[in-house]
Amino acid sequence: MIWEPLTSIEQFDQICSDSSERVYLIFKHSTRCSISSMAKNRLEKKWRENIPVYKLLYLDLISFRELSSYIAEKLAVHHESPQIIIISNQKAIYHASHNSISVDQIVAQLG
Image (cartoon, rainbow, N blue to C red; front, side, top):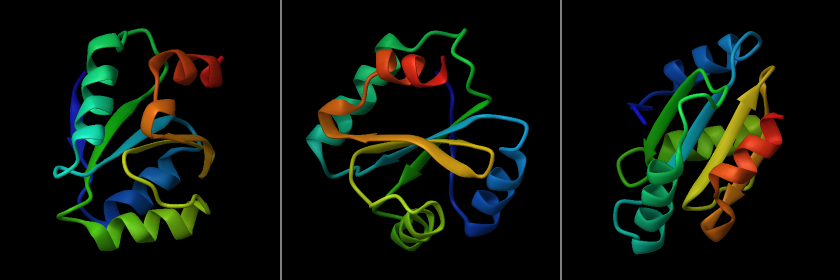
């Protein structure tokens, strides 16, 4: 599982534009939270290469809180941490937080 850091509003806006043709997954992670670390580890251990996500994006909430708020507003998804958001066709097609974050649920949502 290879994470690409998500660090700017411009980068996120480009991802939204590109999501008309591709599926993206954002993992919003608080580096100070043990639950967030456990959720990230669970994802990494169970991730499979054949899951149809173009890019996996990692958002450090401590360093980029303003970006996290922007994403929540832009996609109309209440901010939580930890949280995953799957973006397709310029909208959030699925989101989950805390113990609801699972590879099986991601696969089920992507059909």
